[in-house]
Image (cartoon, rainbow, N blue to C red; front, side, top):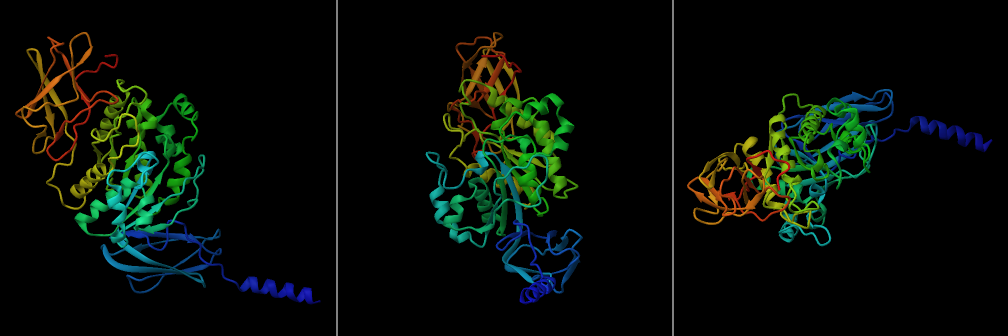
Length: 475
C-alpha cells in the first residue's frame, strides 16, 4: 500500500512540476547583443507552455507560447550601444536569468587554422606582440566578449544547438585562448568607436569552404563530378555548416570575417563562385535581404606550399580578387607582407586585424579617409628594355620611395621565362628591368608561392601579387 501511495504522489508532483527554460548555448550571460535591431531570443519549454521574457532595457513583459514540440521564439528591440549592464529573465513558471549583458556590435568570424589560431599561438608558432595583448586584456573585460563554437560535424542535417561554448569576457586567461584575429579585430575597433564588441567565432583548421556550405547551395554551383570529388575529404561538404553555423544563424550580427582558402588552393577556377554562394547563403540565414552585412576576408598569405618557386598561391589570390566582383559589400585585406616560407601560420595577425577593422571603420562607422585597400596592378607599357607599371589604390604614395630598390619583381620576354628584375619608383609608376631580358613583354610582382618582397603604400598596405600575362605554363 505504501508503495502505491508513493507512486501516486510522484505522479502528482510530476504533473505540477515546471521544467526550466532551455536556452541555446549562444544565448548566455556575458553576451553582446546587436544594437539598434530586433534580436532573436529562442529556446525550449514544455509543450504549449506560456513563456514570459523580461529585459532590463525596456518596460513590460514579452509573452509567447511554446509549440507542440516545446519550441518558442520572440524578437526584442535593442537600444543603441552602451556600457550599461543588462539582464534578461525567461520564465515558464521557473525563472532563468542571464546577466552582465552588453549592447553593441556583433561579428561572426570563421575559417580554417589562421582564423582559429589563438592569441597565445601554437607550439613554435607565435603571434607577434601577443604578450602585450594578453596582459592588457583585463582592461577589456567589459568591452570585448567572445563565443567560440565548439567543433562538431553533421552531414547534411542542421543541428539545433552547438555542441558547446560560452560567452567569455576578455581577461589574460580567456584572451590567450581566443582567436587572435578575432580578438585583435575587436581590440582595434573599440579603440576607434568605443562601443562593446562581441565576436562569435566558428573555425576548424585544414577545412575546405564546401564544409561551411549547405548541400542546396553546393548543388546550385557544382557539377555532380565536382561534388563527388569534394566528398573524398576527411571532413565532407556541409558538415561544419550544419553543426557549427546553423545553430548560431539566429543570433543577430553586424557582419562577417573570413580567413580560409589554403585547403582549396587547387580550386582557383571556381573558389570565387563557391565563396560568393556561401556569402549569399549566410546573409540569407541571418535575415540580411539587402547585403547590409559586410563580408571582409583575408588574402591568404605567401608560403612555400610544397614549392616556393611554384605559382599556385598567386593564381589562387587572383581568384580571391575575382570574388570581390561577385560579392556585394565585400573587401579583401592584403596579406602579402605576412607570409613565412616554412610556416603556414604567419605571426603577423595584428596587421591583418587592423586592415579588416579599417574596412569596418570606413564602411560602417563613418571613419574613412585613410587608405585601407591594398594597392594592385592597373596597367603596364613597354618602354625600350623596361616595363613601366601603373598601380591603383596607391593612397598617399609608395614605399620604398623614389630611387630605392623594390624587391619581388620579375620580367620575361616572349620565351615566357621570368628573371629576377630591378625595380624603382619613378614618380607614381614603377620602372622594371633586367639585364637578362632585352625585349620584355610581361611583368610580375610577388608571383611565386614565396618570394621576398617589400612593395607597399606609405601606410603599410601591401601590394597584392599580380602579373600582366596569363601564362600558367611560364617558368
